Length: 172
Image (cartoon, rainbow, N blue to C red):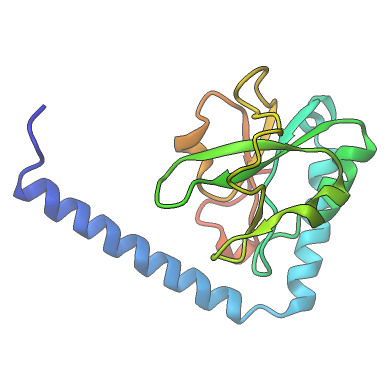
């Protein structure tokens, strides 16, 4: 395969610039959104997710741990354990695009996780005890904001975000 030419490099640069602009626009929208509205949207989405047939029938669910400007996933995670389902969360590898989906033992297990330099809670790099979701039986349902389509293409995905983050609407 030949290395990309000047046209390919220009297209890649244009794509990076467009992504930066879109992220900036989304950050601006989120800053203008009040805490009460974020909480309202999170509660609404939580009810829809928990009531969704795919969620109900799934036994192994991968979900992100939310940041302040994202849909709050805490109640969904609590329900996963209440329903006796298995819960997997991402662990990002430093300085790479690699990510593992590692099993949480309980909702309380979140408090034992390591805070990364990006302020993301995740299992530590030396945590080799947790089950990796893709090592055995795959997850049946994955919640994501953006990484899933390139990381786990074979799994059913359900993307969730605040209304102001949506580029494509009406996932549920």
